[in-house]
Image (cartoon, rainbow, N blue to C red; front, side, top):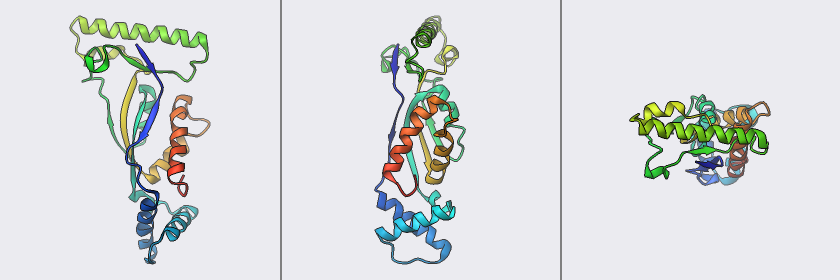
Length: 201
């Protein structure tokens, strides 16, 4: 049994100016004000769009992110429907195989600093892993054995959203009322987006 941290990787982090110039080009069509686009005008114009609440032009650029989290968080994440997803399949992945080192990976829970809760959680994960492997030994297919796997199971997926939907995602998933395990990954991801595109995030 492996216990790992949630993580993310922005896969196609493009040049900030490339994004801003593209968004200005798209947005200026609405106003028929296609001036010569410069670095200064792009930043200013995108700020103007956001300030006015005119966010449809920022739908013209998408960013893909690789997420490693638990299955429970992934179930919340994929509820954002203006997006594309490709997720690790528990139906086809056989965690007893060499590719997985013959062990199952679980995401460390956000409450791991509570020793009593964490000890109970670790016992449950060990039992789930043992049950999964026992089912495979008895001839179950991975798609059947997965029925004993918990929400803490590590999963990996690629998520692609346009910039407007990323803003919506962060508004919901970084809010104080969001689930702590979701905030654990969404808040640092928002900070990465903020560093990449401060005009939008």
